[in-house]
Image 1 (cartoon, rainbow, N blue to C red):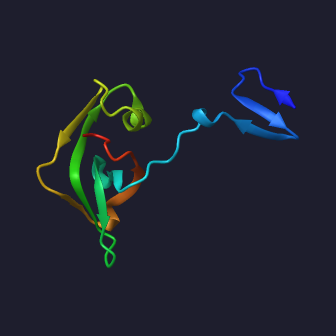
Image 2 (tube, helix red, strand yellow):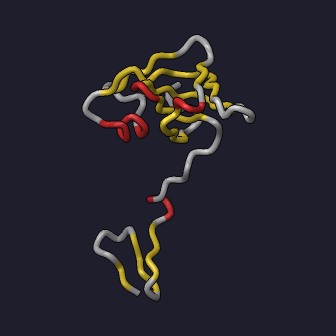
Length: 111
């Protein structure tokens, strides 16, 4: 058995294990950040049309601006003073062909 210097991992028989509280679980639910072509970014509770693949985002917010923290910073801390989110009054409809990628986020992200 070998202990690493940071005491967050341990090796047993050549297999490395990490502390359970140091691993975050993937978000569950329907809320996603959706990156769309032409620079648009929204987050919302996503419903996918089975026939077309188009997305409808309910309870949507527009990721209007962020400064100095990068995209990962926005995902990790949407309430940062460096992030500007604007609520959308209506559901946002996104054609499937316009979606670049999505990231699942916790159900309260951006609310």
